[in-house]
Image 1: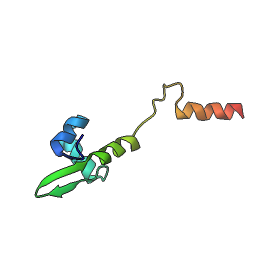
Image 2: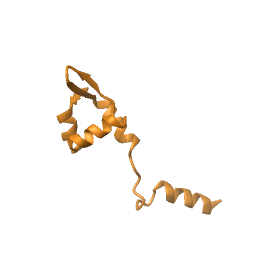
Image 3: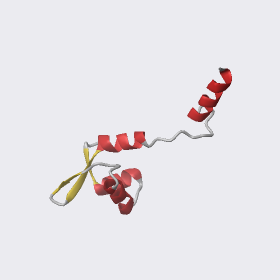
Image 4: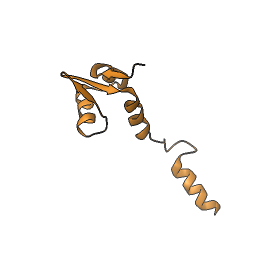
Length: 75
C-alpha cells in the first residue's frame, strides 16, 4: 500500500461516501494534507483511526465487560 492516498482511494478502501470522508476531516478524526486542491491521506493515519475506534463485540465470550464482571466475582 502506498503511503499517501487520494480521497477516492480512501473512500474505496473504507467503503464510505464523500460526505462521510468530509465529516472525518471536519471533526478531526482523520488528518489530511492538501496540495494544489488535491487532498491526501496518510495510510498510517487511516490505520490508526481504525484501531482507535475498534469496538469489542459484547457477545464475544472474552469481551472486556464480561472479563471485568468475572474479575469482580472471583475477588
